[in-house]
Every structure is written in C-alpha cells, then in structure tokens.
Amino acid sequence: MDKVMRMSSEKGVVIFTKSSCCLCYAVQILFRDLRVQPTIHEIDNDPDCREIEKALLRLGCSTAVPAVFVGGKLVGSTNEVTSLHLSGSLVPLIKPYQSILY
Amino acid sequence: MNTTSTHFVPQRRFEIYEPLNQISMWEESFKNNGGMYTPGSIIIPANEKTDSLSEDTSHGAEGTPHKYDQEASTSRHPDKIQRRLAQNREAARKSRLRKKAYVQQLETSRLKLIHLEQELDRARQQGFYVGNGVESSALGFSDNMSSGIVAFEMEYGHWVEEQNRQICELRTVLHGQVSDIELRSLVENAMKHYFQLFRMKSTAAKIDVFYVMSGMWKTSAERFFLWIGGFRPSELLKVLLPHFDPLTDQQLLDVCNLRQSCQQAEDALSQGMEKLQHTLAESVAAGKLGEGSYIPEMTCAMERLEALVSFVNQADHLRHETLQQMHRILTTRQAARGLLALGEYFQRLRALSSSWAAKQREPT
Image 1 (tube, rainbow over the protein chains, first blue to last red):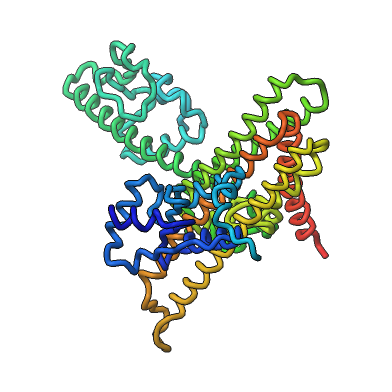
Image 2: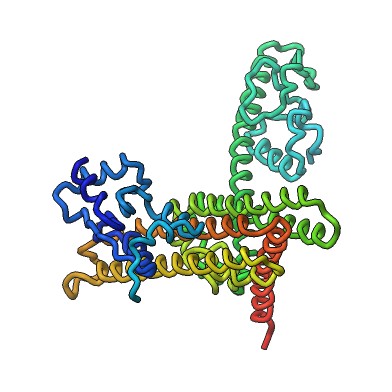
C-alpha cells in the first residue's frame, strides 16, 4: 500500500500505533528511553485504518500495531523489538537517530 | 444372607471392579428388583451384546451360557424356563445399566477428589486455614475454576516435580566430575523446561488472564515478587550474577548490557501496564452518577481486558529472551551453575511460603 510505504520510509524510527493500544505506548516509552524520537502514526485516526492494518500484516508484522520501521525497513512488532534489544542489536540499528543531548 | 462372590457369573467379567462394597451395592439393587433373581441362577447369555463399560475382552471367548439353574420345577415346565430366562436377561441388563451409571459417577467423583486435594494443598501452602467446608469455600476457588485452569494446575504440579528432579541432578553432577557434553544436555533440558512453562501460561492466559496475572498457581512468597504473571527478569539476573564468577571481560560487558536492556524493556512494559490500568479505570468510572453497576463504556472496558493477554505474553517473552541471552553469553558450566541457583532460589521461596504458613497456623 502506497500510503504505508510512504509513511514507513520516512527518516528515522517510524512506529504505527493505535491510540487505545497500551503495548504501542510501551514501545514508544522504550524508544524514548533509548534517546530516540520516533515518528508516530496513529492509524485509528486515519480514514484508511483497515487498509493500513492489512498492509502492515502483509509486510510481515506479527501484529498490525505496534509496527516499527527503522530507516525504511520493517523491524517488527513488540516481540521482535524485545528480542533485538536484549541481543544488543537494536541500539546499533537506531544509533544514527539517537539524540546526543540528554 | 447372600454371599458376595458367587453371584456374578462369570466372575472374570467383573474382576476390574474390586471392592466388595461395590458388589454388595449390586446385591442391594438386585434385592430391590422385585425378587426376580435367585442365588446362583443368574444367566448371562454369551451372545448378548456387552455394554460399553465392560472392558473384558474375553467375552468373545465364552461359548455357551453358564447355567446354574438349581430349581427342579423348571425342567418339567418349558414355559417357565423361557420366562425365567427372559426375566434373568432383563435383570442382568438392568444391572449392567445401573453399574454403568455408578461407575461413571465414581469416575467423576475421583477427578473431583484429585482436584479438591490439590486445592487444599495449595491453600495450605499459601497459608490459608483449611479446616471445615466453611473456610475452603471462602477461598473462592471451586466455582470459578474452569477445566482449562484445573488442567493447568495439574500440569504445573508435574512441572514442579520435574523441576525438583532436574535441580537435584544438576546439584549432584556439579559436585562431582562431569563432562561438558553431559552438562550441556542438562542445561538444554533445563532451558526447555522453562520454555514449556511459558507455553503453558500462554494457553492458560487465553482461558483466564486474571488467573495468570495474579500468579494464582504460585506459593505466597513467590506471589510477593510477582510482576505481570511471573518473576521480574531483572531480579533474575541479580540472583544469578554472583554465581558466574569468574567472568571474562567480554562476558562482563555482555552481562551489563543485558541487564540494562532487560531493565529498559521491563520499565517500558510496566509503564504500558500502568496506562492500561489507568484507561480501564477511566472506562469503568465513566458515566452518570446513580447508575449502579451499569458500565456505559462496556465495549471499551472489555477491549482493555483483551489487551491484558498481550501484556502477559510480552512479559513471558521478555523472560524467555533473558534466559536465552544468558545462555548465549555464558559457558556451559556457568549456565549450569546459574540454572541451579535459579532453581534453588524458587525452591527456597516455596519453602519460605510453607514455613510461614505453618507459623501462621501455630496457636498463639
């Protein structure tokens, strides 16, 4: 889906969320703790919400939200983010986008 | 008074049902059957279909029916013979049906008894006074436990037994000389055992997420440390760390990084949970004053509760990954010591719960 491709390839860390989703909130907190300012797309406020959901699932995300993209590439949902972070592979991935000031 | 053993012919058919009192029950029902049965004259024709509960596969081996007809009069009156035969067949059929019902009742009661015994054990462990029926009903378990949760508890009982066995084995081998290969397989088994628990919890969470969230299957001291349905991964690392010495510099760095990322993931999940509680509270509190238990935003509240299942799964995923990473960083021997330390830690928590419960029951 064009919209999703466009939104996901924005610079930095992009997260698709829903306003009611508390796991999405947890993922945002994690990135904030890692000194990253992700671009958040709250899809439940978008008229194409269903289409976006389907597109995210088709792209290979285990759950539609939260869907995390880094540098245009899909990282995955909460499971994938957790695994990456604990293995030490998440920080190198987001290093270019971490703010220096904290 | 009829003796018990000679009534049922052939005896083989009923040998799986041992207790004499069962047989005497049948006596009673036979007597109540209007006296259609006389001692020694029960006839069970071999060609009649066996009822489903008869597990006696030797039925087919019986050829002719056994006759124990001792009454002389029937030999001169064929009609009477036929009638007697019919009556006996009928009596036998009814007896089999009653027995079937009785056995099914027994089976159900047996399962219920196992379940109740487990509940009592657990309740005692958790320090509840379990005396007469009044107290145990106050625990509120029985009515609300679905069969899936009962199954989970039984499975968990086995899990703990296996856990204790594995810990014992680890302890023994680590005291002596053991090859790395043997140690590796023990470590693998221990890891798989924990992963199995996470799978069990995932299934249980779909059935009753509050049960899993509250750690209901755990002992009281374990529940004191509860975090989203289980142990805190960061605590786990704290417990294990002293047992890994000596660590190489690389290992030390990796462990420090793991501790930090684990803590960050844990904090993120905790904050997500807080938000969930907050939004659920809002949903429940919304609406006009004076509407009693009516929840205007019921759909919303239910959706929040669904999210709880995801959180439980995420917490277990974090535990899973923490264990996995520890396994990656450590040598086999270090991992074995760590798993022993972890297992013993939980054993001690369980022992603490028992001691505390025992102390509570002491008369003051």
